[in-house]
Length: 552
Image 1 (cartoon, rainbow, N blue to C red):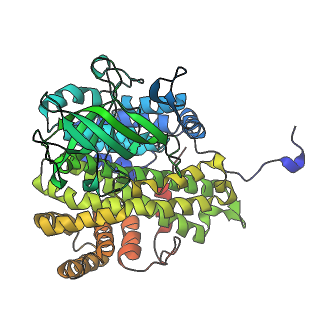
Image 2 (tube, rainbow, N blue to C red):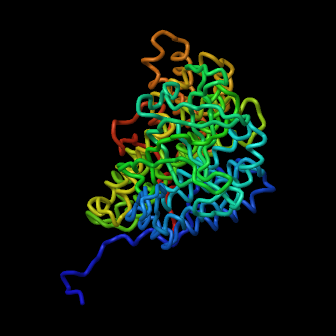
Image 3 (spheres, helix red, strand yellow):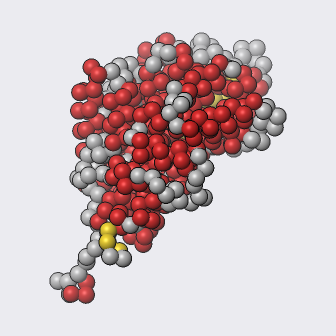
């Protein structure tokens, strides 16, 4: 029985028992904006059900359990036989099963599939982010497999299935499958052409044996993996131009285990629920995907899709961080009133809310471009995906840190969930190519495919004349693009401006005036400090904060 000195007062109730989807105005409006009206009722129903699950006490418990009990590697069985299996807590399987059953690996074959899936991914990631890795890679493997109609016919129905089947057995015996990816090696990292894994052809067409290692292979209990290796032709020649894409199944069609030695699991900063591993290939059977020597081109569509998921995943982390901060401030009293009513706290909350909404709006716009048949949208993706990947993922960590600070000491303890968000926040900036890789990719596109810049400028130009600060930023960007000298050293500055101008254009066109005004004044107009909470005086910050509030 508590004594009077232990009576707990002035604490915010937990943010639980709410609909994560419906409480997110920026997301619900984006879904309505980008989906065909005939799909809206069905999509809203699906996303509302998923949103209620994501906001439930049960899902929140699963998230804590999956991270408190990280995966465990078992290299051998009790008799000394090599088995290379990873054991997960049951919560991991429940989270993964819910993601698959909600269609988060099924975007390519249904109307509005990418918008519906991106919205669902953004919602469900807020329950727990780590299990999104195999979900993302399974979804993204489809376009790479489609370069080989035979492989696509065999695997695509399993990858897009809404049935989760755990455990390793032949794909033909499963009603659903998951995919992983292995590209980076110790000596090369992001420079995948430096890979040394060898692929020796077998007598059967398209079949090879792989020998080598992968320094980073995530979700090693997946059913199959797309990997890169140096392919030797039948004449025995090989070289830098022979990088080829291969499909490596964990279990062979006859039921035996493929040679897939998991050397260790990574001990990571965050993302604890997910198993990331180092693997060795030694006579590992594989099938070629795409043409020999064109592995990077074959796998590039998979990389682009996972990069977009990095954007959406970061938007999800930011949204959950902002929702928690606003919720706390709406209940916590200090200095004679609620925190949410204090002008300085309102400035902080509005500032991080702007980052969250801009990220969500951009992520869903890019998902809509994937659903589009427009050549302009295809060209837009070529520039906008790496630019968004660079900028949105980099904004995630400062937003998570500031949101944690809004909760004070309460946010620094594990029970709040905020430390897990903070540890997870740098991940998407690193995976699928870190910041420099993204900016160099933008430069390559500008230099080799000039038409993609036209598509980008057409997109941002749709808001021209609506805000003088946006107009000025577009003009400044054109000046930056006109100066090709020392372009590489200025690449980060250039890509940052591209992302901000694109976000500003989208918000001016679609967000409420209070949001667009605050974004343009600070991010594009330069009336902003070096920390959050430095928005200029005279903005409607109350409207911005209220829009970001999750009603329970």
